[in-house]
Length: 375
Image 1: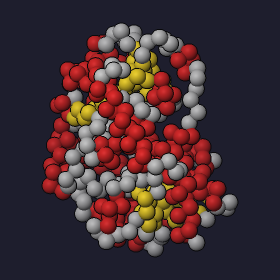
Image 2 (image 1 turned 180 degrees about the vertical axis):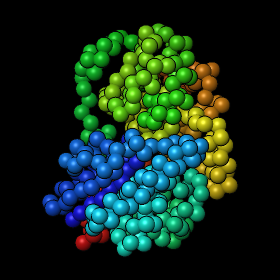
Image 3 (image 1 turned 30 degrees about the vertical axis):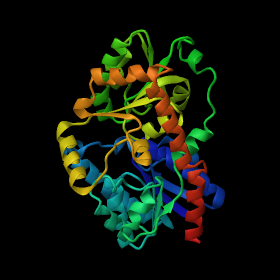
Image 4 (image 1 turned 90 degrees about the vertical axis):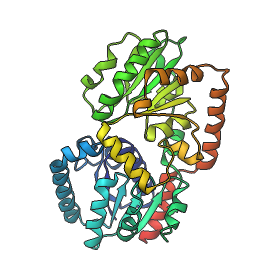
């Protein structure tokens, strides 16, 4: 069969790559075309039509500023999908773009699957009706999403979380510290500022101030290979800071604590059982628009995925104006103390999170269900 996949972010590329591998194990004659990145390229043996680094725009203001570019990508994608004529179109998260592609593809009579639901439960929940109308099968990765979509009289599949797959599959490099010039004695504080240019711009100045304050600790930044190294300049010049690229899971395996930009990385950090502080800051106008949208359309209380799963603020969320050096330090001090009640509480919550998510490979379960539905 012919499969066309669309992912617009780093995490979507990772999960898309695992899904492609799982599909190939079910369908020996599978061929692929996709929008994504290096992980999907490695899994499929094909080049992406467009790399996600060119399509990742974050925040309302940034999207509006790049509207003409986004419209151009949509036009290009629609034309390419029709030229390829896939047996199924598989959309991976990336709601703003993929919802439009789903509507277009459905109108053209193509079969549409959605793997990793857009976060319509977070804001503008009415989009669930649009999804139901334009998507043939939804494969969810958060346990509470099945109940959410039931409110719209839509039965969806929960397949487990693909982050669990990725963590379980990783083989830790025992020489990580040595190869990166890191001390064997000093604790490591991991810094995950995100995978987009705007995230680095918003996060790194504050992270740099933290690194200066904790000058007796070594900090390691999980850098992203497809971003210009110059973007890390606000922090890379500090003597107690190292940058590593493509080694995030090895960093987790060696970290004592972490400062993490909200997103998939917060769940990855939890699965590696690294006590963390969730930090998030975007353009103030974008933030207030999003906050208003969430307030009027949802009862969502948290932004970190683990907090949503457990329905409690298990890990501290410091958002926008609360993301200060003082507030981060107050939480970080407790996380670095092996005997603190706060650290022990977080570790217990991590165990509960793993119990809820389960351990079966999500990509394999998704591929199995997709193959069944397609046949």
